[in-house]
Image (cartoon, rainbow, N blue to C red):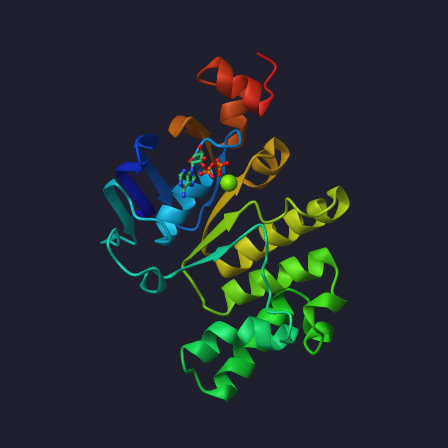
Length: 238
Ligand code: ADP
Ligand code: MG
């Protein structure tokens, strides 16, 4: 069964229809990558799934439950943005544990879950540092750590690596793939980077002007693009 199901989902800002009507099934535990040119509606779609943006019409189901009008905090997902706004005055450990503290979890549990997340992300030696004493890749890992401690079933990533240099991006791609294997969660990952899409995805969703052009495994899209736009975007030889 699909973990995330979008049905006739629509988004309008004023008179501008950004997403006319979109249907999409995101399989449980998949790594689904949304790609498309800047401005095609990827972030808007992700923000609607997260509940940070209201849908104009249509439905969003997560794990079979209709969450279209449900509070973002109750949707069982966590989002990682491109600009990983860490709290500068807090340590790495405090940053990672902050959501649990807000939720009133006991300190012992917070410490344990922060340590687990830090171990997965190899942040253990850095737990007492402040964000300004971290590299870009380390900061991005802290941002992912803040999502992990909440133990979501669904992770939403909006171009999380685009501020990193090429070498670090390559390394983080491998780490995110490992994380996906380990957590067995559903990951929805937005990027405008074809290489990221081709190397990380189980399923790629190609978007243009708020509409889905094609959905499929990377090799399927590469070998059998459904139109010229997909072929050009994915870089297939045809
Ligand atoms: P992408 O993430 O693919 O680059 P976005 O989802 O950010 O695209 O934006 C899609 C379109 O919606 C763009 O034309 C953008 O200007 C418009 N848009 C996004 N957010 C708003 C908003 N809050 N108000 C008005 N227009 C918006
Ligand atoms: Mg965007």
